[in-house]
Amino acid sequence: MNDNLHRFKAGIFQALAHPTRIAVIELLRDEREVPVSRIHERLGVEQANASQHLAVLRAKELVTTRKEGNQVFYSLRDPLLGKVLDLMKQYFEAHLNEAMALLMDMKSEEQQPK
Amino acid sequence: MNDNLHRFKAGIFQALAHPTRIAVIELLRDEREVPVSRIHERLGVEQANASQHLAVLRAKELVTTRKEGNQVFYSLRDPLLGKVLDLMKQYFEAHLNEAMALLMDMKSEEQQPK
DNA sequence: GCATAACATTCGATAATTAGAATATACATC
DNA sequence: GATGTATATTCTAATTATCGAATGTTATGC
Image (cartoon, rainbow over all chains, first blue to last red; front, side, top):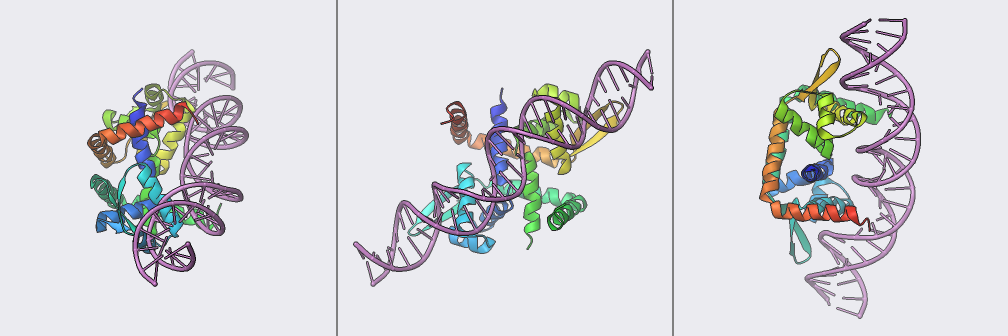
């Protein structure tokens, strides 16, 4: 019945399961600590949307926040997450060919919705 | 516009974002190659449901299959995935206390659906 | 206090995931 | 070819995620 552990892990992966949130995590990995303004400027998403995604990351406690005056600075709670993404990059590179095929699929489905 | 890469990675995390699929991956990591029957017996899910989850893993090409007579054997396409889960285990252990709190939350929400 | 800036939350509408039931396919045995 | 076993797919209903628009909150400056 230790399915709880699996639910916990799945929950974390779910938090990572969105392009915008991946981009956020990578930004935090690269720049250490970033205010929300920079996040939504850099990623080109609306402020409210960025906030929503940040809320997801907070809910799973993948990030920490620090308030400084008017702004809120986000950072990764644990550099391990950066490592996980590094592994994913390795994975991507190891399977570049299939990855490309998958990406093409994604593209074409998007253009001709069936 | 290299958002495609983020979509690719997010897609993989999404494939991992379900307790049953985590359990499948861990089973494959531990037992190398496993027929579907063993998967749904071991995890205690219905056959059709196991098949659906395996379909998700196949779609993202996280697993390979080999047919032998009547049965289909599944295995991890790349041991890197096992490593990702190992990292997650580290992460889990490093944050055991918060993890417990999150699990408790999950439990209580489940019991009193508000 | 009033205005503004930086974030966060709530509210709808739409889309995607999920489980189970029913159905289909593929292979082996007789 | 009929039967049985292993796996996959399709359908439907329920849940969950996502986005943009609108609204709230908190802190700063005047």
